[in-house]
Image (cartoon, rainbow, N blue to C red):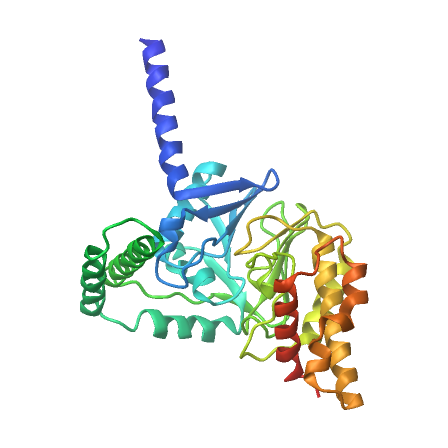
Length: 356
């Protein structure tokens, strides 16, 4: 009887792990830090569909700190369950949004009993998300689902197009469920202007505002004891094929001097950084990646300033050859290819607008 009971327990545990594995992927970073990523199908919910949206969970002796709540309540529930199971702890001490875009704050309402921490500018970003994604009706969404199913009926083979249509149907169904459940966005309870330190139990967590760029509320989050830095979607690090190359955001104010000052101060203070985790990246990075980004920002800023002083054109600075020496010094980080050239030219064009 005892042996039979043991077998049943093992089967139940295996079944639970298998079911969980289908919906979330967990990567152990340190003993107390993990990344949790929903399966691809689950990502097609309420927001910007992306192949990867990582949340980061940190175990403390007072409970779990969660960084970024995914793009919907459906995904936030998956993340919450995964973190609870992994750490065998259902207490959450802080929920941190690295900024207010949907992939980072869309599941805030799932943590209605917990303190949410973010930069003070995140409120406007979250409101924009609320207006954009929740300004529709259930009837409108059902029409979209009906139309997409009709399109699917005309496709006789399974291919990338049918996969995309099925994913969009999932997106609208999850969206519909959130509206039916009267989902509303939730704003941060605890905000700051420039820096904040949290001390949940045995952990020290430092938050620093980066300045306007990808969004208006981008922060970096450093877990001191684990030597782990979380960058959110800053510079889109990890989001492109050339993962190490930073990409500046188009059509937003870009405060490059603030980026440089914040990163320089952070790197001077923290000489040991073992892991750099991003929201949309496939792998952890190292301290040297942040050093490279900071140096790249300085090189771009200085080149644009000098070109404007000399009366040079934008195109002359965009030429990758003017940066050959810089990239040669950092070829341990990345090698120049066509994608790097395109990203570099775009970065120069964007920063050109913001430097006098």
